Length: 490
Image 1 (tube, rainbow, N blue to C red):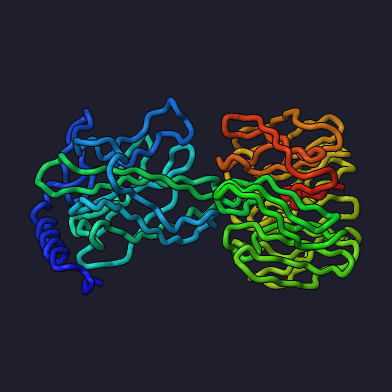
Image 2 (image 1 turned 180 degrees about the vertical axis):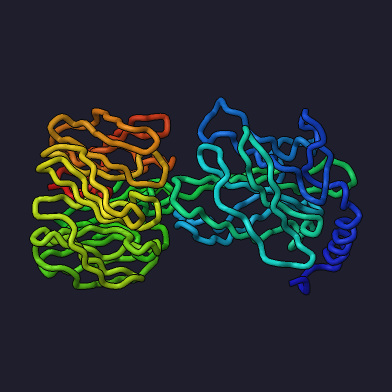
């Protein structure tokens, strides 16, 4: 790796190694008193210096300090470098072990350090950090308290400050997700590009953040944690989408007249794939966002496609519900073929992850008595809940950001959404009118499903981040919102 360096660079690297040892007691982020003035320390910063907020999304709430509490000089992120968290997927699965890399870059630095934390929107610590055995060990995990809540931080040690290459330093860590989905999760990191001059001045401090969802963005063609305004046109079999990262317009012909849209992430890359179910030959056609195409015959005439992840591997499975016998047939990408009688003719399938374990649960809404029947993958397994009435459309989704699908209905007769959530209880809100197609999805990327309807080529969205109201002309009468691919409209 160093063979191509100049002689000057080689000399500089030798100086860096010597300087790192010499500066062992002078670098990076440790507080010394209650007024947050701190001495520098190469052995690793004290806890709570990542600039993470006490409560995510609360502008008036305090935040943790950052490394400038110890290192005087320029304001954070004003230097020529950065701190970057890489490897975080768009969506996480329960108990998933996710390799992450934290990189601090600064062309003027001699030694480097960092600290990172993972929290829920409430500010509580979430998941666990770990690292590979090494001798000497460049990483450590420490604890601190913020707003009365314990947080666990991963950071460098005295053995982890020398650059990986000239101008930057990277650390490889593993973050293990919680045993249940808990909505949107947030990672905050602070980094230091230090000059190692035996003082706390002249160093450059950087901060950064990233997030991951529990599958809330269900019409996401660009993996930016937001659902995209998008439609499927049954008359021509064409998909149209407005992505936000990068901002672009997508038009893709995939399907034909009469096909049913069954969007989902069938290959686990975090992007929604174009997919249709063709009733005429009961075949599923999937165009994978990452490349490739598949066609699988699964189901029979009269079946209702019910896309979802029924084995918890992060991939959509082929699945149909057969009204004539009330049976679910699933072709799991891991678990294989399964058949389960659940429901009866006249029910509306309403699958969702109601217990936050990453597995789609069997569920039906019975309009005749306004009752939900759910077969959960966790104990208690069978749950009956009276909620709704004849004419309602079931629209289960995670409306409060806790990682669980909530029981919810849209009532076309009065344009009111009714829902019951674990954190907010019973809620109802007028948003829409008769004839609208409900299209709930997380359009603002805050980890909560937003109320949305599609009306004659216009999306009306009531975003939970704010909240904010937006309308967007996109599509035409007869189009099907991609987010509605998970909802039985009849």
